[in-house]
Length: 163
Image (cartoon, rainbow, N blue to C red; front, side, top):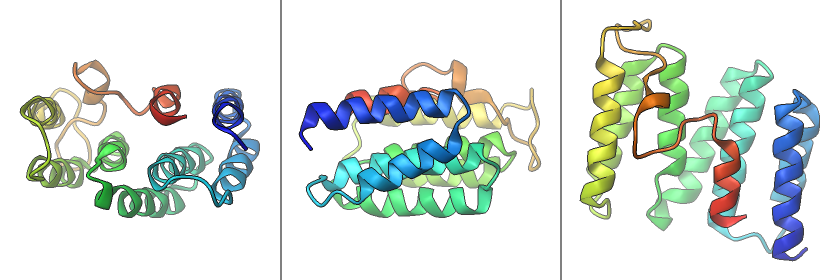
């Protein structure tokens, strides 16, 4: 598989997700993850997409496990896409304290730029706004309107970075 085939396959799987065909999307993410030539950062992005897919299919416990796997894959590469994605996902389920804790860990990473830290600080502030309380008093959906980062619903942008 070359890069173009990979990119097109990711688009197909994103479209399957958008149609609600979560079984096809999940099978496709697993298929791509079986490719030996796939770089580690691409694996992290695919596992993140797998987490979003199984969550949309109603399997949140499994989704959380996939988020954690994506984080483990990307962390040695000094990336935080999966952690930010898991934070959004948690906040969307009313678990804002956990979401904020993850973002605070990311902000503390020595390789984060000031701009990235600022964007994450704004996200934390949005999570803590009392306008749409989650289970623990924070905001469940604040990320979609915050500038400087991509909300969970922008799956296709994940593919555009590396795919």
